Length: 499
Image 1: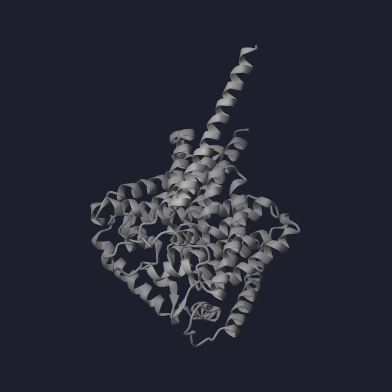
Image 2: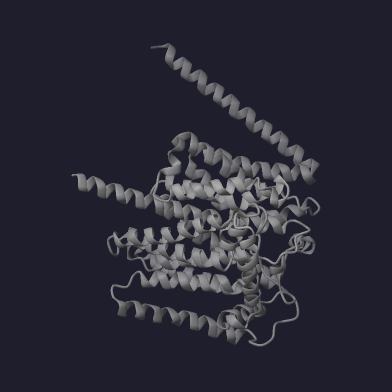
């Protein structure tokens, strides 16, 4: 009886000594890196961020996921801030931090649940087949070097791992993430307003002056604001999701007095979205809000009335935008709120009048009639999209359609699988909504879920949402959550039937 407490005390002492030694070593390395500056300090800073996220995995899987979700909206800002210390380089190790932690988290989950994760929910089998195709396409020789294939995996394969996190997390984790997204969308957007009003800090101007292959940085002579994200498109997509979520909680009766705060946040985020200059995100928001309001209607007449009411705030926003912005001419100097409002308003009210729309249709026609028939099995996961755009010798026009990008990269079967997964996820979320008690917390959550999945479908058709750093993992996380909840509902029905 006396020996056991001594053993426990020895273990505690050894652990304390180990923790103290690690802290001292970290401090010594930090002091050296600070004095050395440049590359040494950059790698110390990035290593510290990666270590913090990996250590959170020791707490729980959900802690690690939360750490990555907190990091990603500020990924772009930290990426640009590193040029306070080092000269510009296309080699940016900061892009590897989230994939590294995602891989570690996936191994952790695989070790805990074994092969069961690949068939644990209704959509798991199909998603696993898609992931297997993506993995095989890493080694497709038609794309060039293996490095290009691995780069493509960062944008295509790594986000799919979040599906398994979504189906394995606790029931209240994704709802907490949804609330967190709204907060992050607001905080990051205020920095975007700062960029538009006061201009970019010098370190961001340095990045803009040196970066290439980033045509969306400017509208005529006006540079788009990026907020804390990697691109204006990423900012727009993130704010779009946050807006839908905020309005979803705002119309959920179970939120009580918080509804006013959620609706205020939603209105603020819509204003932010107008300043991003992302017309596709505006259409995605409109579809998401339309679905959100329609799912709460008890009758067809009520649905028509809800959609009619939905037009009111949009008409007010566009009227205000048209009043503030010059509807005919863009500004010719510097950063301007006026220019971005003009760009958003004209592209949304008259989408057929935009040359970029016809350019997309021309590119899609070429892909469907020429490229895909000549090679329906794909050119490799790094052959198209962001991975390909990083190649200096790439001159192809951007596809701006994730489904076609998948078809070109991983083959037509992979694109069809992705479409089936998204459509099936939409159907499952609608069934979950139908089986929830009206005015309950679950009912409000599934209205948000249906709206988000619908917007994912549109945004992947007119964009590349599922390759965007901070948005793609969230999309797959929600798909995994829907799949898991539907599987649990089926199990409950089977148990009730047997009883």
